[in-house]
Image (cartoon, rainbow, N blue to C red; front, side, top):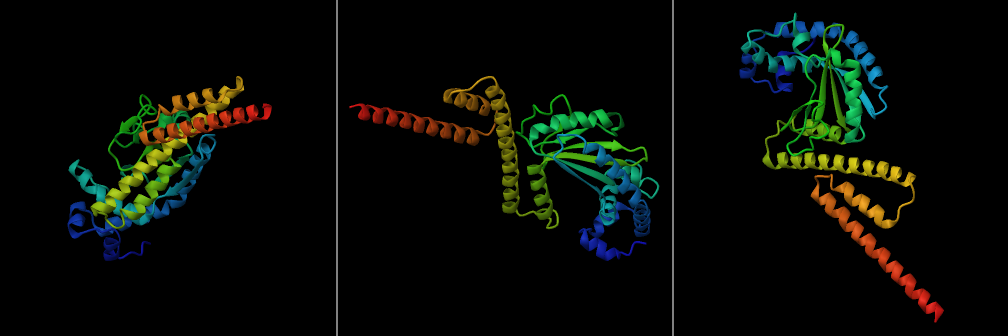
Length: 295
């Protein structure tokens, strides 16, 4: 039995009287939905665990977590979403809430590198492609590299966070939402959710700081992908024979041209110039010392 006072619920989730009127649902109906959901919680937990075990078999998954939606969060989402369904000629009720609320169960897959998304996507499509309730899609920011996703998944720009989404219909009926993102993207999303939503952030300066953090997240992912790609390709090159310093520098310069981060590219070029100058100085110094010894 849900032991929650209506006014406490309204205060916790910033639900105004106007928003409540727009939802056009009674408190009694909302409590009935919550009680029904609580009865099925163990069942949903077992389903999420089952799917998590399958996904954990993919070698490109760094880590993952699963969850069943909190009951009060379900109630808040129904209040928020019901006006949309009312406009479409229907309403969320105890009979259909598990069809309209598609994230009752969720799995979050975390990747170490951005490029790991492709094999994880292929794994998901192989195992659950026939069970998708809608086309898989990815949120990216305007200006982000699109090549990784083009032709494989629907791309949606201009969202505050980056994440790929897969909505899988389970044999039991309800859907399970699978999100895929990198560790950096997860860190930013958690901080954004912690700082922005509870405080209903509207301060322009704070919003700008959050945007800077988001851009830094994208830059960090690009740097991680570049370094990983460099190490892998360099090891492959080394296996074919030893490389001199010029070949190493040329290889690095060629690789960084793929990055869209101009600051990162300039910093790497500067490091290579300094390294070249240092090696030239060492070579000249060694040659001069040899001449002196032979005099």
